[in-house]
Image (cartoon, rainbow, N blue to C red):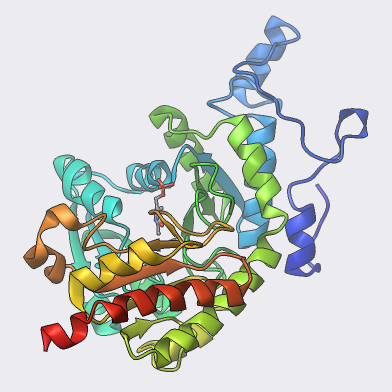
Length: 404
Ligand SMILES: *Cc1c(COP(=O)(O)O)cnc(C)c1O
């Protein structure tokens, strides 16, 4: 593998994880095989003992998967990476590798829903206790750490409030107490935030989102910074079995080549749309890390290279207004997930979180008017025109006056 350390991120995206291949193939071949032949009994024995490097079985290691892993490890500034079948498989593998019964986790309260559930159900069942706090407030982290805290799990910007936690400060505190810092970097991607350089020990991504970027793969990745951790994580992943497959790895590796370009466009368009929304009379409580009105704007400036493609806001007029907005957009697609080339819009109160009921939603910071947009790479003028048209429909319903 070539040394790319001096190259610009755009160049790294194109060349990372790429090696020399048979027939002069420019891209990594898809080794769509479950198993690999040994040359002899002796060869098999030396592969299994680790004396010789090679491939044995795809759950253990596969060249197409490894090429994608190497690319992401390089982009994140880590030592090595482990491809998983989904973002949640990555989260589970991390917890299984780092935690034992009797251990304690400190976790961001604004975190991807299934991560909360995993900690509160499976991990709890196996004797791991979790304290959820607003990790954007450093004092909270100091106060939540206990003698048995082994992991501080941070998602920043967090879901769905986009609150920003200071990775560098949190890492200092955690390390003083012997705890590892794990960062879910899905919302930023390695193009915009490198948690390892800021002091984190382990980084995870849902590959499903910005890294693949084309809404056609479910996958996850874990990036670690030393070989000892890598070997331990590889063993754990091999036992749990939540690996990614060669074809999806190939697609993710292809997606990575345009990561820098895509992220640049996501950031530019999201900034323009956020500024436009902030001035709109039917919009309140807009959150975008690139707006000076964001409560943690300065922390974002310190640790982001750009502010990402995710925006949340509240539409005036409550749940009905949210529904009208959803039903009136044409270009923005109504769907969960994020980070693809296509813009997606979601209204938790009438969609993903409808069955929770209003009380429970409000307790989780989800107001009836809350809308989340994943800004794609379409023309920003077309995206604004689409939102503008939908806001006209909301206004025509006279919900704001009716509420007052
Ligand atoms: C989607 C997502 C996950 C889970 O990833 P899957 O690939 O859906 O399993 C974890 N964290 C964040 C921030 C996400 O957006």
